Image (cartoon, rainbow, N blue to C red; front, side, top):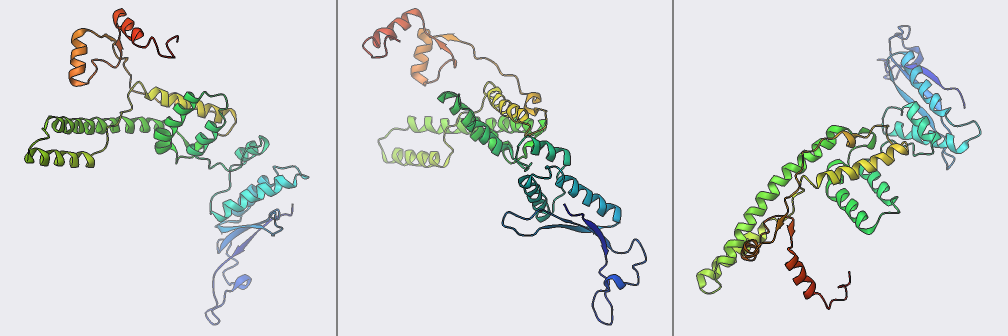
Length: 319
């Protein structure tokens, strides 16, 4: 690798000619005059194109030399005979130069290079979740569908844009706060829609006024959001588990620092629904309103027997 260099330059111009003084600037004897630039030859591109690192604007030669030392340290990560590695490192340095970004951290770059990972540390949470889910080869169809749903509906919209190595506990906590706030809106909108549906069902079909009223109610329903299920407090731990599992794999593969923020995000406590038995009164109420007394309803032995008798000739009856 060729040795780099640092040089000083000023933009002073000769009033008589309008051209820059360059090395003949009368203020050049002042060590603080002008700015310093670091130069370093990089490995040629894959197409043979010559490349050079050039970054200026430093106020002192020490600052420029420090930048040059960073470039040289990065270039020294691959072995001398590793042409592919040197080209890859040069690609990384050239990308930082084009994007006007700081040079990557030496220790992190060296770790990624030695473990065969991508040197691009800008992997987002969304990109990693896709990679992680695609790598789950032993998942059942139901398990895959559950993870895919959590990722698509919750994790990507709230966290997908964040760099994986920048994900913090407060990002995850903010996601669940937003989910709970959205639940309030969903419940209010569902209640409003349910009230309109009840009015529509209570409005007779006959009569000009009734038909106009039904038409008006249907138009209002069309403008409202459809019924949606809120993400309950008992469902949110499942989302957290999916994120935690994905981040554990990222940590194991050294794609992110060895700290799992999902393990430290706190959730509101959920409550298990109380199971109720289908009594005659509850059955009558359910048939009248369509609402179950509890999310978990239990059959009596007689009701179970009635069901089994009803499906006795079904092909799945032995199950």
